[in-house]
Image 1 (spheres, helix red, strand yellow):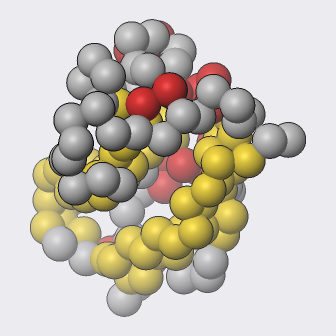
Image 2: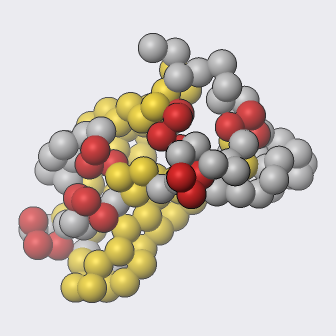
Length: 130
């Protein structure tokens, strides 16, 4: 709620052991379900500003930030949407040092200059071969 940065993360292993992680290299895509609840469209996050990024345990480098809207048009409508992102999207540009063999944290973030009021729900995070 409010203006500025809003974000959350889920460390799959609770930060222990320091070398924990899920090996994404056998998979082509990361998928999850997302639902955004807002009292009005003006309270919802700007769809283009909602991003997902991953953390790894091996070298502690983050992945690239990937816009959710690129893979799930209309996801701020209050309904559940499946988002399927190629693992390769996380390792481009700023994510070139991210180690997909030690994925251990899922993060979602947004930013807005205007105050916003919404809840983002994430469920069923999976690695998939397509």
